[in-house]
Length: 559
Image (cartoon, rainbow, N blue to C red; front, side, top):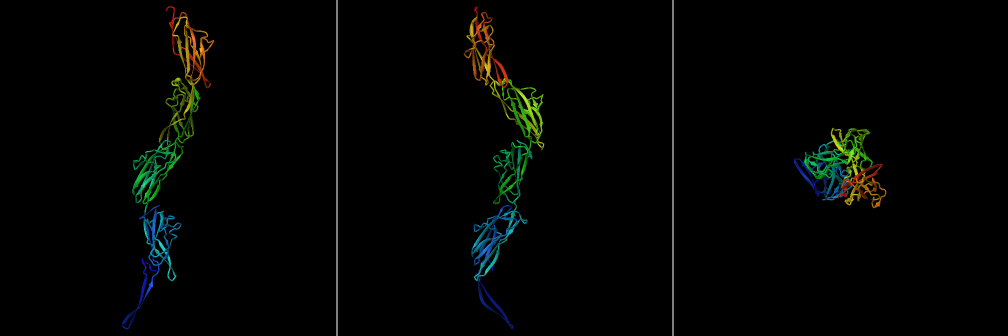
């Protein structure tokens, strides 16, 4: 077999014979024999589409197979992959057409390659490890066979050039850190990520993704890249980093807040760095970081009895504080006394023991509460009349617990916790009395009419009686008392029973007074008193109000 770029079509050959006789020498030529050359000339050339290979990046190889002979041959191409690479399945293309299910090592059948034909084979491998030499070296082989004119089967093979492809080392490190290993609910923690490019070429179009674990909230506007603030960036949507040159680094930082999660919760996450290296997309992940949530984990519940009260009633409050956390904490209870009530001195108890010097105005110190234990604070208040103007229908209350604890690292933390809100429904009547005297002028020994209108503008019914309704130097005219248009016979000179007045109800009492024949005064000035009582729960409450002052001028015989 003659392996050349182009085979001659005919091989011309002639023999020569040299002879000597005595001192004479001579030679003689044979006839010329022409042998027709018949066969293929298979050549294979190997190349790569990139100037260098990169770790975890694809390498695209191209094999060009040609037949410059004068006879077709059946060709199979073999290419044993270099060490440290892995074939990309189904990546083989022959003249642009995919050939699935085969590998270069097992052979790529081209079939019959006619004279003058050229076949282009393309396939990809992935660099999985860097060879010690730092260079990928390999060559391909084309095995072929053909049938001569005299029906002999001839086999042969051609080797490609040996292709050496340098390996560019991709070395991108992503190191993540956090400001504290132990935190508490409500704490702000700072995350920091250092991205270093130790590769031989730039990384471009880079983006940092850092989705935070459940229980942590990103602080908007806190992102900085290389010390420059990026207010619109967020780790969940991606923080744009841009280009990092070889040997350079970028520092990315942002803040997050620990939300309401249970103690012992481990907040773990890691960042992912996306970038373009050469023509290909790459990624790198950071180390994971973990923050453990610690703290006292206080729970505070307030309760009150009774839930229905009126003016003068005593309300009994209880606050139960439980430490379900891991740290001991010191607690002060504040804002215990609701508006329009007063603290009942001596009523404060902690876990059943009296607190004789308790001062709710300045806070009641409960002391240090270890994990797993609880405090029960009890105290009482009295509802005052200050609830009336304007009419107050309920007494809401909650307590604020200021507590201080120390983290394992030595940091002292002060925080507050509010209890639930408890509500006491407030009920009471608001009784008012208005007095008129008619006519404004009366004679000695004569009579005049007193008219009293009693109203209840409160939200609770009351039983009302009219008292102190007869001024001096007068007397009640018997049988003259009328309540709401109905005579009230037998009314005494001390009280008039008005009856029950519900919310927004009113009663009108009219009666006649007889003036003494010889009064000592020329003008009678007087007021009346409306006394009332009502029942809330099992307690009876009573009170009274005075009317305005009315006057009647008295004419005597001397005038």
